[in-house]
Length: 389
Image 1: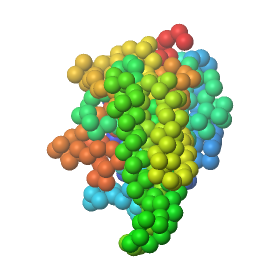
Image 2: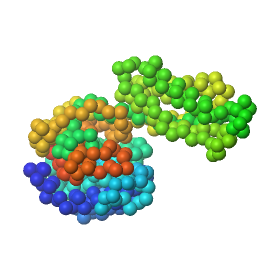
Image 3: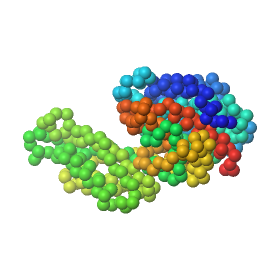
Image 4: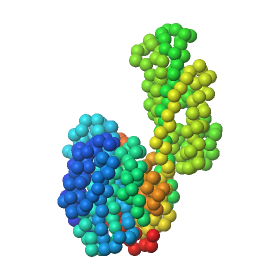
């Protein structure tokens, strides 16, 4: 099968579908209409599916052999971002946007499903199509895995549309792709009072600023300079009027590293800094460290297989390298349990103004990348089914 040609036969279908999802984005665990459309497309293709975790879907295409079982996964949720760029398919859900390309991910997996179902006679395996909700808040993958529906996977492939690589290229190298990702909430508890009389209060803003500053000492003075460590406080809220010290300040942020041991140690290290800083300035605190997902690491064997798949589709020039990056991805939970590969699918095109980063309010993608991504799903599966797992 000439996979790329087969995928491109469905050009209008793919572009229309992607633009539909882009116009109708839904937040994590609210992807009800998105899931409804996914399931309708699967029904139209004659592919049976099981609903899972409310808005998740696991569909199965049965080839002429039960093994191997090969999983193809996409994520389906959007972000709470107001879309600025004036596109003909601009979001119709105010304040919500597919700024991370999950509309493309859904489309690529449905397009792959269409091609695979049309060529079921070439399938010598069981295919599981995984439409996962709630990747953006890092809780969807675990719910899919807890269902038991994908316990039998022999290998699994996922991907992310990538505006840092030109359209027509794919990166699938072995080893770490994304860091672990943890999230924290910090409440500084001081003593409220009049803004003109700071001697009678415990200012939570001042203490919070000291905490933010002190946390960076963990990066610069307590961890190995050879380790990637990111501790970022990204929200800081306190007070309502310019002449009142509020009692509390609320902070939140994220923590990233490739080092698995350090990922386990950082939550306690962070609390030590918070506790002692607050004590120094007579404040109390509350601390919650949540959603600590592991690093996303490609299996060496699966990456080698995927590299060959990319070469078949796009030639040597289409296979590119991209350095590991401190993003976060709950597909890591799949890769902890099953050997697999996570691909970066280039979607950048300066001529089409597809140059903005993920999570940007102007984000858009070169839709030619849809066909590269869908073709990669199909080709990896065709190649993987020939392996002994």
